[in-house]
Length: 452
Image (cartoon, rainbow, N blue to C red; front, side, top):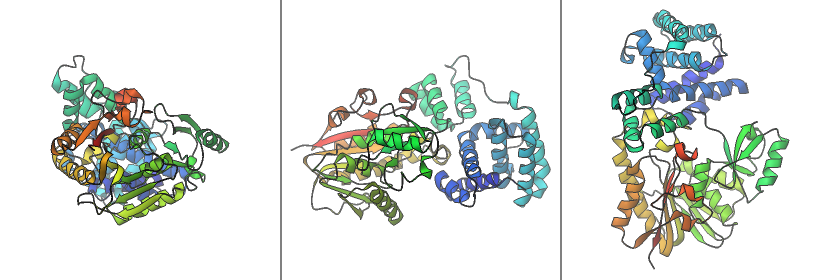
């Protein structure tokens, strides 16, 4: 019998590679048939781990197999990847069990003729795991080819992205960023101040065996070190929201306060919307919109659980002019972007994205920001945010907006949200979190004021 977690991981990886699902969706679907929590956790760990280390794993497989991946069947590639990941990163798992399951899974997928090949490749990897043919950290980091071989292969990031980060950040910063991305992402909660406060939630979680520590930058962030808070009723009852700490900082930039009229234009799944509602103390009007019906349904669920009563939800596509005759005190635009700032949590993104997509994404982001700006009253606030690491989607969009909209001025993020720690505000006045500096995902935020 093949371990159920390995089958689930294989199904998730196959879906991601085929482009039929992103990693979170693929894992959720694959784990649905697993009853044991340990199997569910293992399946998620294998799938995410393979995608974190896919560049290094593929390099090792090709070196051992002595043939390019293009000559292997897709099913065999995924079996080799998930099995090699376990051999190299799960030291407590017997190698024989991993190899035996891989051979059985190869037959189960209809590739029985490749069973001997899979067995031979994995046994060789197991024997040579202490001497893997991976590019070493170069003694002279100024040698570009050696540095890129190490960053892209050994630290497992696409070469185009490695080249960008090396040129923009330098070797040590790029290395630190990639090392951050290759670590496991913690579960981070945000205290919902409409329902509770931080001390009360900490005590409640402690009574459930959940150990948390406070975030370094966001005042309502709790990072889970031990336990399973999602098994309790805290999420369903709205005591907390699952939200990255960097995302919480971006939401603070919205400048929400009681009695104002605010608009959240790309609101689903609702983490930032409910942050804003709590900051408004349920006073005033907060309109939250998104483009797709399924996203709207998810947004409604999040808002309902949070206890926010001042939120009005509607469907609107920001790629088109917004259907508002009224104007808002603040408009928040957290655009759909490349997601390249969230590779620790979503490692599949680095293999799905291509450098050539950035210009098209930036064009859409500029259009969305322009449409959102029409809803800002004179003297009102406009905030643009992404979870991208790349300048085309961040500083360059902000600069292009100012050049195209002379009725707006840039304002310092610290002036909008004085509670923001100053070290997450860069020299241009933008909010910018960096993995190698702050230990957070890479988020960006720029604020503008409409002239009166």
